Length: 220
Image (cartoon, rainbow, N blue to C red; front, side):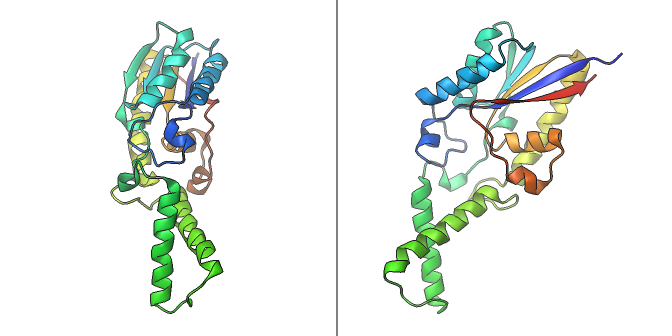
């Protein structure tokens, strides 16, 4: 008879960079007070679950969140794995979303002027610059293949997360244990695509909560 093992997947709580709308990526940013409360909410929801092994990324927000969860599971072994860290935003890391929007928008505006696609605008100029910049921001955040400068595409993130999933499933099948994963917003996308059988389009539309978890079943 096959045993049912569980995977509990959750995102770290809100960080100061999250709160201020700054590109975080591989930079470290601590949990805000709200982020700690969100981590505690996840911990309470998982309080009565059986967790044998837990994975965290090498970034402090993942570790802080897992620490809250494991207060109710003090004997659980922890493994740190860089493959589940956040997407790299390259040269954008540490920069505010609004500064990116303004810079890109102004560049696009100048390009349109250069090619005589538009005339010089007065009142509508700021609105157009903002619209152009936000359009590019949305492409970077929602595109599967587009990379930020010197950063990663979601396709690249998925490649490393898939490698992790294969190793994790091997551990589950060999040891017949339940696993918790303290991940990040973008590294969670490939997890959910794999276990929920999503298309790339559906995966890119996902919004992952700071204060909840996803549960998956593995038969071993």
